[in-house]
Length: 545
Image (cartoon, rainbow, N blue to C red):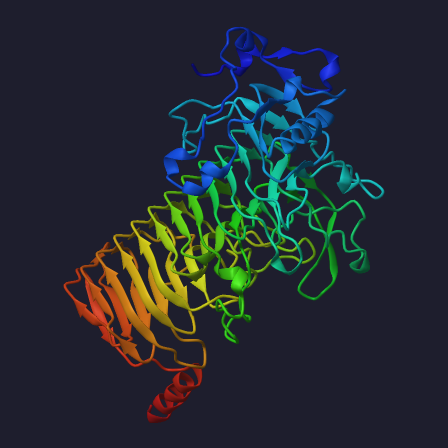
């Protein structure tokens, strides 16, 4: 039976401190406590370590208000070695961040046996409403501490067997963090949840030193995702929906930003945008030097960046900006996610402090891969660039599936298969590739996405060549070209790819690849040239003219 919120919502007694529940459903016996493993179908043995059969109904836990009931329910479970705090169908008004304890899962009622996050009407019947920020453009503004709450771990360095299942979160994020020196518990998960208006505020705004109003606010774009999970081993982020929000957005006029001459200008219409934030981060570490400089991350230099047992699948992520999914690890599986970005979004600033230009970047990106042996398969994405301050030009972003050189590893035995999207697949300027399969992808580049080739594989940084070995680019359908470069290039194949469009596309082969049986391409064979070599060749050609 599907839950009808409008029909069955009833207010409980005031003693439950802000809790609403569905009395008729409980009376009908539909709300019996769940004791099954909702992750069993994923066939991950570690999920059986969760004490699913130990369940405490939060509405029956002792305490004068909901927050104390949640705490007392967790205390009861701790005495039994862990278990589940169950939220029957209803609306629960949360007043502060929930601290999740070791071995505890927060679980709501099941949406239905066939409920999928891809469905537009996906909404778990157990809803947690966190405080919504109330914007006031006066004085110091409303304190940030009044909102931006979520679910976090009480002991992130050790908490294991923790998760959130089948909850509808409004204005609340999930942050399973780590301790000092990357110490971290294991077996963490977020499954079957919906998160709306899940974002934090940027700590660098307002910048009083440049004269910004104390009431100015901006979304935290770089350092926090709506769902962010760190783990020492084993994690699942699956079947979650991050739908289009906007209900909690607020618009600011007279917003002070620095223009290109570093002069403060007042801008109207700047939005605190809850969808301009990373969607899902799983062990999203920087594991090497900045782009083009290295050194690259390895299991020896950055062991925390090569943790295993990570799975991201079947999620729906809507964004107006930033990275939809980002991960780092060894053998990460990123499968069957649907990602959608809004079109034609005006982004007057990407920092909250400076106006944006065409050279700015908001890092609008579908999936960001870091580490080794990842598998990115079956994802469906639509990414769009934002319009900069002048409203005429696009910001320099709009990327598809990307393993870039910046704070990353080399590419080692990784897979990009069966993805569909409107922006490129890019292995961008890495310091070496050994083992990469790109097969069966359907990439039709959108006019508002980046202008790079549809498949971009470069094992060379700006000034130095690096090896490109064992790369197979097979049976892809693309509307722009294919580029493969690296030196030395060994055992590389580009075969069976199909070009879409009336103009022949180019296959740029700068890695000694075997190019055969492709349809609708012209092949350009070349030797990879460094930036300096390329400039020198251009000067020689100009002299001859």
